[in-house]
Length: 593
Image (tube, rainbow, N blue to C red; front, side):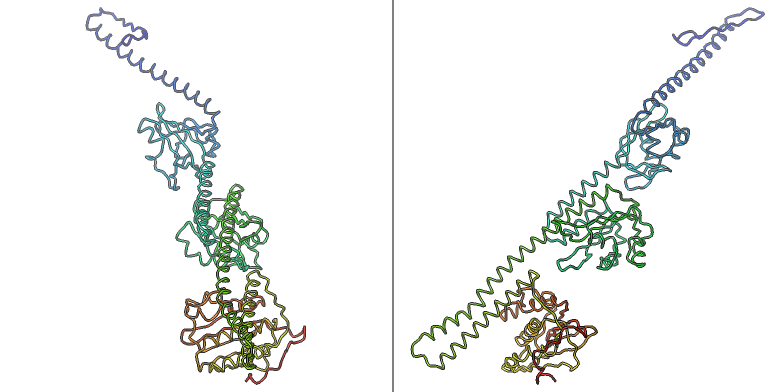
């Protein structure tokens, strides 16, 4: 029994009672040939099986020492090889994987997290194409582990395929971190507006690092605002306004408030009910609606100053923050704080430059006129034979000009004190009505000369207030003086006082042209003047008024409508019933009614 020139398998002997003819010999030869072919096939199959087992044995021994996950499947998809690295990466024991269909052990996802069908699986593609397939865009998971990014290679292997893969979570995370840091560096260096910087950083962090990002920024006046709230899920953006309402307040104990006060970062890997990071039940309900899963809050610190806090949170992604994420958050916050600090320093320098230019303009313009008067009248006084009446008139002109110069210089000094935060105010218990009358009386002749009716209305039982009498006098004088400037002939100015809860409100109303709505936000800015009244003053009066009121911890507001006049209201706290004696520098006088 032989096939072609292969070794002889053996021999077949036939015996019988009669002789064997040619036909019998042909029959026997045909049988022998079929037996030989069958034996050859069996031998070949056994040899291949032995070779396959030898190969698999070698692979198992080699794969056991590899750091990459390695698994093999036959053409039916049954797992025939599953090394220790695959066990570790997928969280499945080899005994629970071998002999099972691969779909029971390995779940393949696209980069967006959606499951991949069998036809798109790298193993199937490799078998179909008959060549290796490499991919860095898939996620692998199992019943025991959530999907994680991998770099994998699938290749056909005899009667099946083999898959090698490794976890590239750290690589992907490093890539994301570097991208976020690069984007942050780009945005913080592209603007000198601190609000734009904050908004750009929040957008750069979402969604690569966080599903939600918001910034609590401490303004120079001490208030904390939460202007910027960014969601990865656009469907949640309508909740931004609700999130803004929970900007930290002085008496709160939210993580953001503690971070701003202490400068210590905050990390909570798993947010349970939201109550552990919320101020109240409504706040906790909002966090649950947003589906906050993990949170980091870090301070914004530059040059030893804390500008606020930036908060990163995860939600729909299900990601949990760890110490490595905290380090990235701290670095993002550091760069953001430096950019905010630079923007504020630039703004301060720019304002200082403009203030210098404005100051030079005011000094050169407003002092030039009284100085000219002084010089002219000095020349008049030098003339021999000058009559006494003319000398008296010249001296009076010099005095008025000197007073104007003194007032302007005092306003400039007060402006500098307010800007530096050093304005001196010594509040004490003082009769508000008396100060009103004392401030208004010298202005009555000026109002009368312009045919303006100046009226003071103060009830007899108006409570005393906590105020510095000279400073309060300055406030009323400035407000009434402004009203006289802008009130037309035959107009009326009403100076009034009334109690409003725990405060006393002192108001100055006029029947002037009113203030356009667009000018109201800038009304108390230093050196600012409306275009139509730019020649009527230095632009310091209302700025000083606001600075004095702020120094008293009071409030200043304006109500105005074009064509209907304006009302300025100063609100000051009522003085306690006991304490320093009531200051009353003069009687109220006949102005009150």
